[in-house]
Length: 359
Image (cartoon, rainbow, N blue to C red; front, side):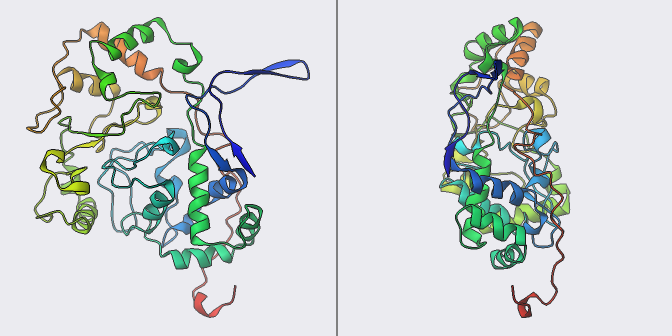
């Protein structure tokens, strides 16, 4: 069954004579298969999607943090650690490029594949994953309900894609018309003196393009051996020159090898900021106050920094108002039944001689 999740504006319906307010979302919901999305929700919380069953998608994308993890730099597969901050999945279905460097730009199925199979992420051989899914009777039933004959790799990725499409901001003050006076003043700064809207545009507050804003490096990427190992693996795969001696994250440069794109990263959405600290692609800023101070100073020190960045000269009250506006872009928590698989039904033991055991 195909259905559309989400609505554009607040709607009040009558049920048994009682008025019930519906969620307010910034964009119409995306078309998806509801049964497949429910299957994707179970898969999202299943650690069997990682090679050694230590990680699920939700290990780094936690619903109570708007599907981030609250860490400056995220975790990774056993024996490694990641070199970037976990981005929110809120409204990710509306993007046309993903990850901080934008290197994936086809669809969320491709994103799911990379997250599951990359060695420093979930390190899963999809042939093994398929066998695990086939041996779970709940998955066999859910795949059938979703219109698929049996559990498969492609079906699992499509299910995860449909689940991620359901993750949509709801009831943020900017959408419900309930912004405070401070937030309304802050919106004027955001769109005017601050110049923030030149990159943080549209209802998702991103232009989906890479920019160099001079964000300082996070030295932990190179002082932590496990993080450095993951960084080297990534840089080597993308053919980055001199990757063993490199001490900077080149960002979108890996996509096109143009020097002007060095250290540039996709503009992040500003939706759900109150849930997603710390900030920037490397988690270098712990608070919104630090982020505002950074841009008030004109960004960081980088010869390739975007020319539009300049000192803003904001006074303390203007900074407070700007932060109030940024906070008005966050809505309801995702830690709800709609987004969390709460059933404890993963009772499954790995079969050591699985090659010799029939399904």
